[in-house]
Length: 453
Image 1 (cartoon, rainbow, N blue to C red):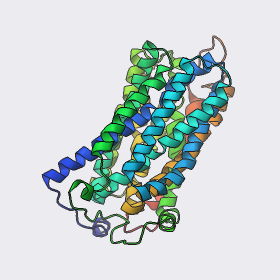
Image 2 (cartoon, helix red, strand yellow; image 1 turned 120 degrees about the horizontal axis):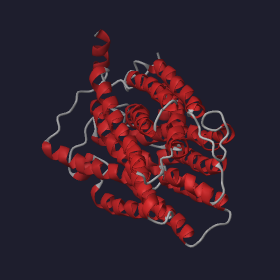
Image 3 (cartoon, rainbow, N blue to C red; image 1 turned 30 degrees about the vertical axis):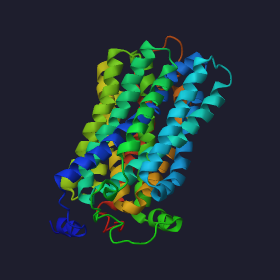
Image 4 (cartoon, rainbow, N blue to C red; image 1 turned 90 degrees about the vertical axis):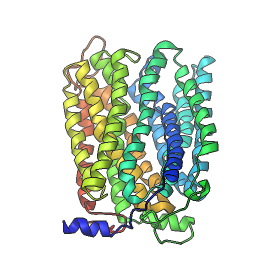
């Protein structure tokens, strides 16, 4: 109890917001959430079409994994530069730049395949997907940067869960709607349709989203994070000192490396897992529900993780992250033995509950807390970048493992039916366990009590 009081005293008082401010805040973050959801539609569409594209162009899992790795590592490098850039130019401009780039690249890819592109697909898609991922990297940074100015640190846990639920809608758009597009339209439309959705949200953001409350006619306030009382000018030196030498951010970055491998290790291959192990095709009813399960898992996980953090751990993020890392390991182990297609679809959603709960808590909420309002995008960039370094290993690395050993230890061949997916989940689970161990190093950290214990 003494610990709780001490932790609470390290943060400034929660401000009282008027009804007009709360309404304007919703009008600010709601379009941001929808925009990021359409970003996902133009990013994870590759996950849905990857198996069909590989079969169409005679590319195996390891080769298709090279395309994914090229995109992931471009994203990882980009956020390290674009985070400080977003902190300097503002989140609104950054998300608009990213939207234009992402919609153009998805449109280009779709039109190239529409016009019969068939040569050097591996090299060409690696380059085009990488450019798309460069612009995609502005998404999370922009969202974190804008929302850091509108929410006090003691509001961010629950809000992070609410906002994460909106972002999870992006998985539904990419996976369930993407599967439906793949089943009912020419396959290249899975790139063209998302570009239209992103274009619509660009226009909405241009007219509605604002960086700070004062830009929308309301009063700025002390957000109680690491920037509170800090009037140092925001230059490149400030951002690098504030983020890259911060012991808690560096420790959380190590955990986010683990999150990246777990998250993309599941998302990049679950479509092929359902098809090859349980004979569930994209566009089928059960695949639709599996995609919806990813979304629902993300929503419930984000809300639950945020609520537990704010209500039971006094806005400390590491303890609840530890619990969710352990939950990941348990659900993934059960997924490896899933006895039926329905069980597999349900366990994918349950795994996502724990995976996305941690992802939103660390990359979204903790980056605002410890980076502060002034360096939130840089902190988010560092955490997201490290995550995508690990994600890149799931491309060619996990792709090679599955190509060589199959889902259950037997290389895939015509007519063979895998009995389980232990090779797949067995390659992922150690990273969940390691992430949990890392969280014990920063168990009591808060923005104004940041020592590593």
